[in-house]
Length: 461
Image 1 (cartoon, rainbow, N blue to C red):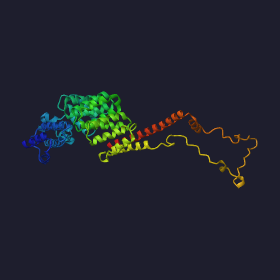
Image 2: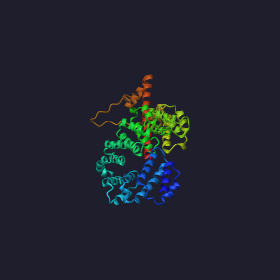
Image 3: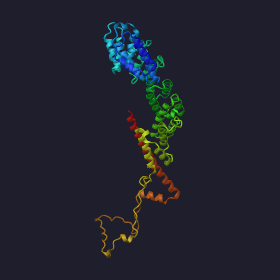
Image 4: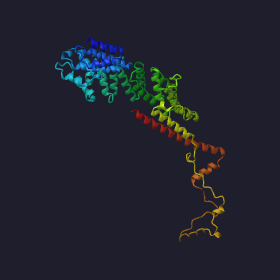
């Protein structure tokens, strides 16, 4: 027993470096006198270390779950006369343990130490049928509110109803996180509450939850999920939230994570045409590099260049694009950079008459009209004789010889009016036509960037 407790204590204290001893211990029998509830408390401590940012504790978590599983399978019925061990078995099952182990314990429970309503509801939930356990959970959560398993049970009940009854789920999450502050239960409750409020587009609640999360669990391995929710919220409501509140929320994160969120915001804003906002976010990301020419700084510069496409000096932006090496860009960023370069090349391409939707010019007349007429004296083809109209129908009116028809088609009339207008008016008309062409081009370019971003999002999934 002393040897096993020594291994567990050393692993908890050091967090890592225990792999060889842990693997050796896994091959041995677990001491049947090890208290189950103390082992589960050690598991809770390890999981709290993980959400606090100790990634090395992840391996310890796997080791502890395996040790507890073997201890529960070898437990005697007398072990569960102590209700602390009954609660520990439930917490183990709700903390990533093996549901089959809980099922085995229930099948061997001849003394009625386990509440069958609770165990059946948990087995349904762990088996992916939480909806069937909804009614039972609603009844038993208040009963277990003051017990050790109460916060875990509230978390389970909230997960079951968060899709169909989000307001009830938020109440469960609030109680669970307040009952176990600083624990993995609080972390999970905050993170999932944020998912609900962002989906509801509840700006104030979402900002409050995001600030709570980043201030309490800034180094959690699950923080990336929260960052994705924050980006979604900001992207949909950036004009209502404002730059100051965004910065005040993200300041709780360490610089690398702040930079990651700002880069995500900048990319999404750039591809959707909100260039001023994209420039602000990318500028903040660049400032967090503190003068280092690292990869995040190059990505920030990429988004700054993309956000200045409509007004920037083309040569400067092209030069900046050329200085971003392919090896520091992922496939998504590379496609985005290439899309920006394509837009620049299209802007530089000389405009054509077709691109500005102007009327085509009239066909030039022959330099010598006499050359265009057949000469009857030289055997040229004689002009065809005029056909006489049928009897009873008047002949068609013809313009007098040497005079053109009444007028050209309407589109040529418009072109003629433009040509005959005063010089100032002609320039105004030409500028209007050019603006229409450029507006159309920019709209198409934004659509292309949006399509690229959609492809990148699909790739992320």
